[in-house]
Image (cartoon, rainbow, N blue to C red; front, side, top):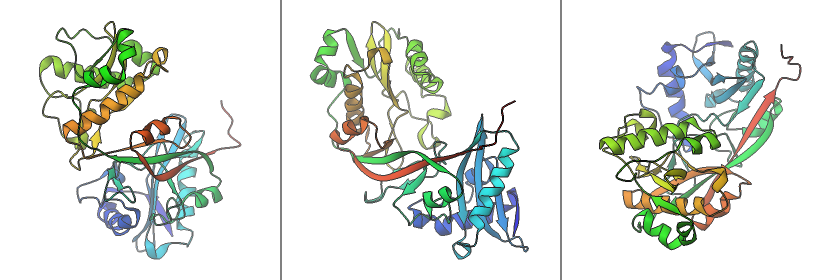
Length: 350
């Protein structure tokens, strides 16, 4: 066996290997020009025979004090020969030399779409971890034998997340109407619910983003509010579903107190596969436990339907109290994923 770094010349063989096993995992095949696995990841290694045929592949990333193991792929006819373990050990040696604390699996999702089981084809844009109780996944180590294989390699389970989905019905009008029905007490307390900025555009959101510690949401609010002021589509590709620029400004659902955004979700869009898309949902910690999150989430579901989405998928922690809210809104748990990790016991900080 020969292990070496992945090179651009491996692209065709890698795609052929992925597309041969992807159906086992309910994953979608990759197009010929899709280089996400082969070129966009650091720490990519491959394993082949002396004739340099591709037998297995691992990709991962190094970010900050942790390395992330994203994917291990082994040819069907080469499984149970120690190839998966050899790839993992090679990756660990590579990232350990870089001085990281250890390796984590899950939480740095590989952006490859997969179909949730028992949904009739509902898709989610990335894999978050190692499937639990779903032996049909294709990877000889990382998925096919799943968490048991990684535990045998010294990895411990950190937590679990669940993939959930919901078919969307008909929408019921603007967010203000919903807030009038569900959020009457909040409105009396001075909280407005908006789906776009007011005519004067005077909204502040930095305190919210500071309190929740998210530069991503700060950028989402900034760029979509700028799009509304200019009457043009959002110019930041980070907020384009499917990599396509939206046609114009999109609904941005906000809870506002005296011009200060204290909660939001959006911008709301629809992917080509009719999945509802949004960047997330957050409420300022000082305003939590008032029902703001529930009003925003219900408004999100209705707005997605109004925009033409047919379904929505999301991940949540297996023990997250928000799961009850999602289930009340019609979501069903479809698949559980384990997030694992391994920290070097003999690591000494300088």
